[in-house]
Image (cartoon, rainbow, N blue to C red):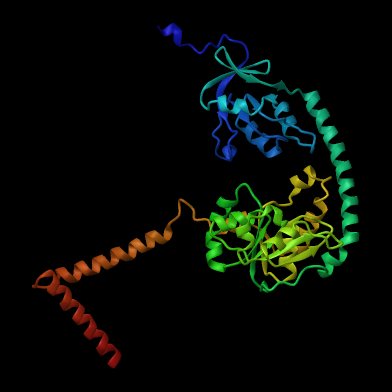
Length: 396
């Protein structure tokens, strides 16, 4: 019987414990060991992730995506290869459902096995291919940034009056002067992000500007925006009739999509003519030029990854310059939520409250048990003596 329970180490390939890190935030919580075979879903593997994998001594990394997509030059794959880690890519997302953390896996010629049963496979990434992709991605990124530079210059040329002096921004009957403003755009994590902002919302009661379909989600979550910026065709009737001021993005000549729907609903609306059709950018500029002391952005952000990935997008210059225009007043919602986060290991105020209650209990017990009478009589007698002492103190 014992002979039937061996690990089949005689089978070819790399053998190690499976570590499935394809879930959200799995990498941050991962506990890796020497010789593990790690399954990830990480297009354009970063250097920081690669270093963590190297420090953990993993034997192989299996990527459901591609280690370098060509959108940006990333050092991560080359670092792993330089440290002798075997890389397999493009296995597809279906592999993630089959990979069970803790179970012994075998990797042979790009295919993954549990014993002799294959659960999928992909392409082995070698050093030559990795370096060639890096060089190609670096050249492509240079071309993208040159295109972005030209598009940005053209956008500034056409929209300088808007960006500098706010020309075209509508006057709204909503007071944002020296107030916190929350700009909410469509976001896959909108509901949980709103929950994380509940203490901020309760403390400051910010002016809420809804962007496009986020207006519907805000109403469903019990929040009523003061302004809605977006194409009415993508916004529900209830939101448009909620009493919020509706602002329609318009082309420079004044034409606004969705105007007919607004008229059919009998809802008043204003237009915001600009060279961009991005409602979020308009909402940020609207809050800025109406004097918001802080603009909290919940939704898409313009970071270095987006800049590299979407350099050729016509919306990128608008997003970049709008964010720069708001400047130091712009804060991402995740940063605000972090300030209000209650640590699970915390709860110091609970211990303080418990200490006060215990102290009061001790005083009551001492007062009730001192004297020859009953507990209640002793407690009343002690209270009367304390009250008389305070009266004499104030008389003197």
